[in-house]
Image (cartoon, rainbow, N blue to C red; front, side, top):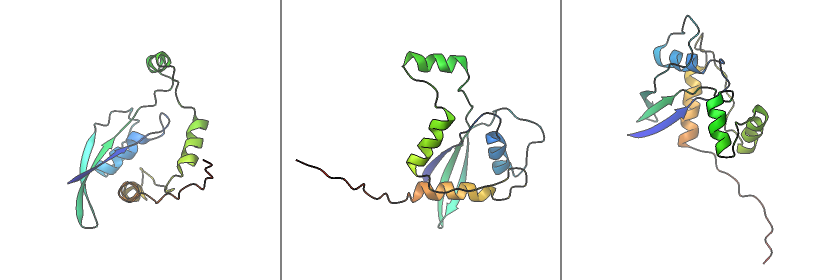
Length: 133
């Protein structure tokens, strides 16, 4: 069975953990839950084929002093929101979808679209270039 890894990223306290808890338990957490989501695997059927969907939560560590120090030692720094936005544009994101972890409206669709994007990545058009030899 093929495994698909889904990593949920975003700013701190925006609802990444709530999204994952709501998706995996069909219940919205009643209180604020800091990142405590254990990595989770679920079997999903796509086109009649079973896939293992691995779900991974993340923590916003851009302001964490230990993380910033480790990055600085490697002459790196956290990605700014502006750089992240530019990266998303440069990567030509496959799809824009909305959902509600509270009402579960569109929630399953978010993960379905992510799975389809992983299984059927869009074809990239080769960039037109002029090469002089």
